[in-house]
Amino acid sequence: MMDIDTVNRLRSEIKNLIKVKSEHIVHGVDTMEKLQYSRGQLSSLEELLQVIQYLLKNEDIEDDDLGETRRVSDSFES
Image 1 (cartoon, rainbow, N blue to C red):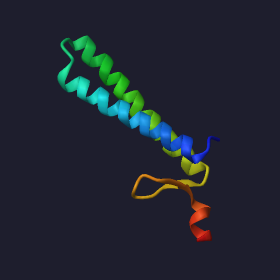
Image 2: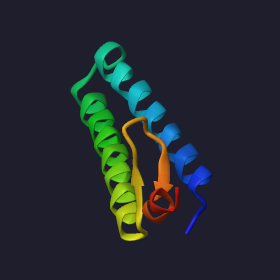
Image 3: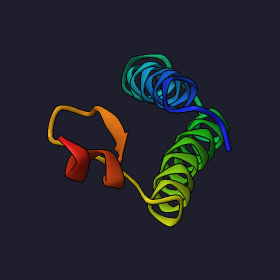
Image 4: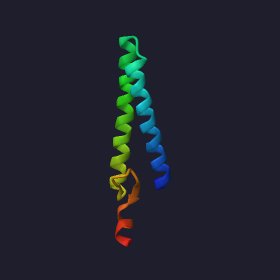
């Protein structure tokens, strides 16, 4: 599995792509085909975030409220 910093960076980039794609859907789509294509891309990015979250839970890693990712076992050592 990737280290936590890499996972955080990857999730941040995916969230940024979701934001950009959402803006494109609102302001830059002029045909129904482009809309469907962009919606498919957006859906895929959102699903990818869900898969990453699922994998993190299986690896005993969780998010705190600030979006920071850490191992669950680390919180018990403090």
